[in-house]
Length: 198
Image 1 (tube, rainbow, N blue to C red):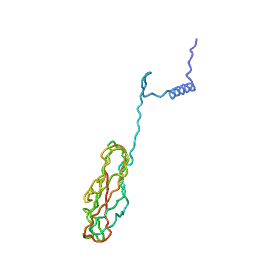
Image 2: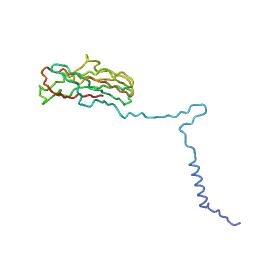
Image 3: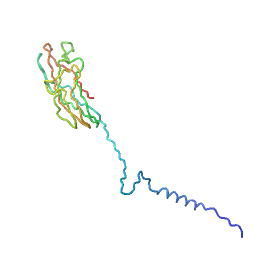
Image 4: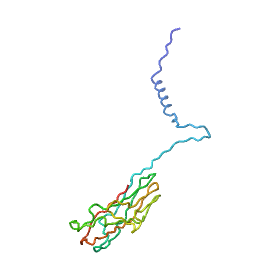
């Protein structure tokens, strides 16, 4: 009997085998992160993020704000307008302190000479209680009433939050009191009251 040769697989047959292999690979079920037997708990950890984009800010009235008028030796007082601290840090410990002071140089008129200056020691501030709050925690006025008013020659606590967590806010309407010196000259006096929060 003569030798019989075996023909090599045709290209078509080889291609079909490759397609079949690829098809089997792409249709395989995805791997599971956990495989659990029946009647047991099979857990998947889930995460999400809470953002705090706005941080801690303070909003004060636009000036100029007139608090009234009076004669030399008199007392002038008036509302500064609402001041608001907004705490959007979503912090676990959401405490803050707002401070207030007057700009150096006092309140001046005309050329700002000593005779035309009311010093910051004669300008007082009291916050009063909060007119509105949001969030949890303890909100504390810096000066609860007129009897507690403090001069603005140094930095004073205007308001604070001493406990609580998460977003919060507080608004108060402080009063400015000026003890006009008996030697003050006539004129419109101008100065700056500065607030900050940290």
